[in-house]
Image (cartoon, rainbow, N blue to C red; front, side, top):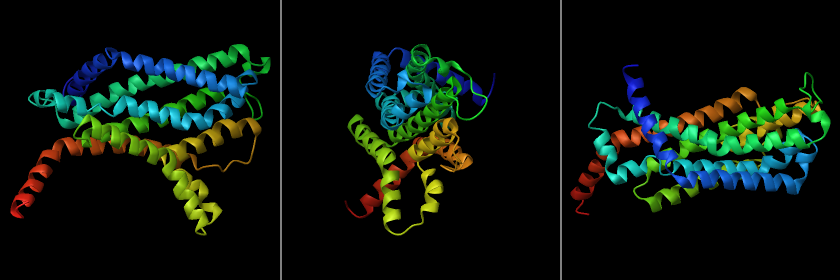
Length: 287
């Protein structure tokens, strides 16, 4: 393994070791498992089948998974910069893009452990305790199946990956831990609520309801919700479909996932130059 992959792999191993040594992430996973299990027990869907369980979990997931992802990523790049380790790393033959890719790959693996494992445990619990017909692997619409929950889990991880990337961008832009928390909270609220509020506003302004599927896919939460309705809940009840354009929704989640590294990389690569230019402008105006 040579070239860029060497740098990515080196940073990935280092960052993964940092994640493993952080006990807070284990607490986060346990807390998420408790929250998801409690919500499922309160809703009662888990005793009925996989699709009722997904229905119970859909709305809480749109808040819990982005929250967990932001916690995983909001200091991913800030910590090295604040401690001076990033300056040391940059003295080695590791490019900014390789560094950002390695950090984000490690944080994505952490996401699978912190978010994916609790949801998988809940899915196994539903399989073991729900009605007997939930053990059927569906070959046609209208049948509850473990495969539908696996689809849901895949969409959950896509949603989480998008927010981890956005949180990493926030960590690159932030100047301190306090500003990282503030920016992370802003990104979380904007992602969870912003898309729906803008959609409601556009409909209130006279936009056609036919534009909803396309507009829904533009935000991470909207794309996630549309995919779950289209390929999990809708499949079990054999509707006509049309909740969201699948390609556009998947492309939106992938696009948000790639947007974060681009912003983070550009900030780390050119941030000092921009700060120096702004300082020269301030000096010229005597500020």
